[in-house]
View 1 (cartoon, rainbow, N blue to C red):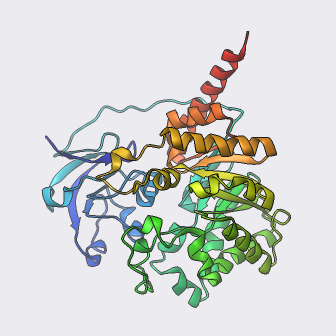
View 2: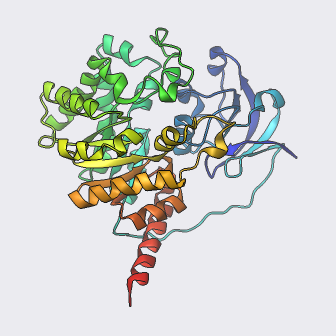
View 3: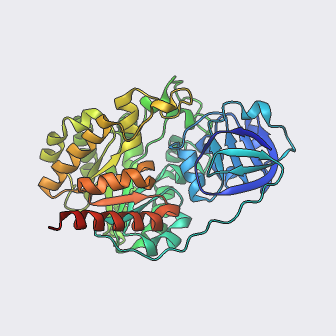
Length: 411
């Protein structure tokens, strides 16, 4: 019997007993294989959620960081049920279908839908987004590099705020060790390191996070490069980790600056990079993540300033352009990555990159959506960076779309 429905975030199915999380102490009691029910999941829970048989939340969206990381960990996750914490009770046996978003009472056996994939080699590069270094070895043989290392999970799973790690002298080392594991797996393929990007509400429960400000909408608040520029020592610690790795001989690293709102932030970030002893575009490739309309419509300034690559964050771009909180359940129907306004902005920056010989790449949730990927290939994007469980599927999708384009161009 179907009990309720939310938004499925993966192709995985889980069965187990319900354990409701009502306070921080409950997190420590999680047992292997339990189905965790929580009003809202945050990054600081991930260390414990990775052993769950499934995760169900009242709030959140498919593009949330927790949903993305759990997908990498192959943990079934359903978000946005709105009332899962009211309907589901401790000890109930349920089946969680991460494909459909349905939650069933008891054990439901699904017919396996495994598909055997041939390895396709499209002209468009197919890279991977990584949150968890341990996955790097299994993903490396099938991808052309890493479009985005998201270092937040490396930090958050210490259960300490970045400032706390900095005060202990451990922040640079924590980042360096996690990134090195990925570099070793992918060398000499290019690996792009994204500087710290985490909203305030996902830091407050970490040790040392009690001073985080309360924000009604953290996704539009103190995050991305603006946050790091307001706490420059943390940004320097990130850049020092990169410098140490370059000194060790890892020459396949690039740095991208996330959630930029203004060219001044990009210029200042590169100045700080110089302050730690690294010359942008000479010692290391530097790029910008296009996630705000303000960057789209001042993109010529970024080209003039210099960039080696550009990545697209379509989820944040849509959130900013359509005035829709991408974690908001009540406005979810308005969150449309294929909205004409979003596609026009995306095409604009891709065209400018192609004119200037700057590599363009889609990262994040959109890189795993086959219809969006097809559209981007038509626009001439150079690279698609997707989640680890989507690499083979996206390779095939891109290969087929490239061939369709070629056939249409023939007389």
